[in-house]
Length: 275
Image 1 (cartoon, helix red, strand yellow):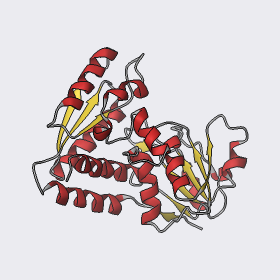
Image 2 (image 1 turned 60 degrees about the vertical axis):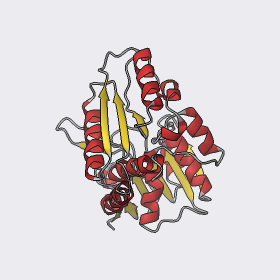
Image 3 (image 1 turned 90 degrees about the vertical axis):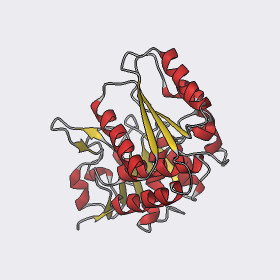
């Protein structure tokens, strides 16, 4: 058996095209991406956002504060962008310098411009079922399932990873879709026994090859959110490639969740601009 490929490329292209159509209805929406890191995988991701934004007619300013930027400098710049009426969306890219946390600094981003759903207020509204931008990566998982006709309602879903970027908000999105959700992580006792019960398994722990065939129920849908840099400059997921022989469906890395995430950030920016 070979798993069905849950490609995100076609969905991402549709989302980008829709964002471009909506952006063309008025002045270009503007997105600001604030970085304070020398991490190459982060730089690659920011370049992909900027490139996709430009093609969709969305202005994108990359504000590079350097890997040694003080916390207060980052906070002040976020606040300035949040107060700038010409800027419609603000993203704070991770990783951050020592002593800085995303939860703390994202408080400086107004909820209406928090297009990646990073601020505690946005996450709280999401949990309460109130309007808010969801973290784009978490939303991308649900969008990818929808695209391929995988309905989580009534199914057992295990999310491996408890970050506020993916694991926790994704569990809320899936609960809202009537899934039965378990959030596990790298320290879960007998992780394989937990994940092997999942009809839908989402790997978002940030560890190359964490999920092996032994972790997967035969025929399960597996979504790999991992984007781990490899020594040759590529990307590897959290799922061992051998899982393709056991799963019913598997998203690739790259080409699965990643392009959908970027496209949803564009959608959020257009929406924030009132288009």
